[in-house]
Length: 115
Image (cartoon, rainbow, N blue to C red; front, side, top):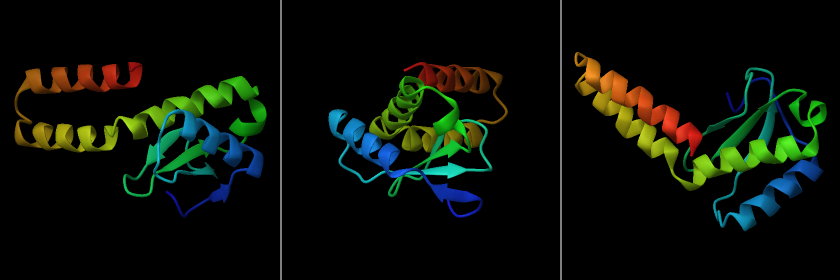
């Protein structure tokens, strides 16, 4: 997804992303791309994280809303949600037969998004 149907976001948004990163104390370099494959903003990758924004979102929404999206996605990076999701998927695979695992997993995913 980081190579197909993507283009680099405008330099002004890249600068704004770096400012927000500094404010949140995220030292890892994060790239922001506009993607024709996503319908919602998403973060992919752990070692080289990329924020994929849907095409038109950066121009179709007010700047305050786009900044809120960026802060939300950067918070996922700061909390290392990728690793939590990996561990969660491992437990789901190990205990796939237990309905309580699926319920707890759904609750954890929802709360991670609410954070």
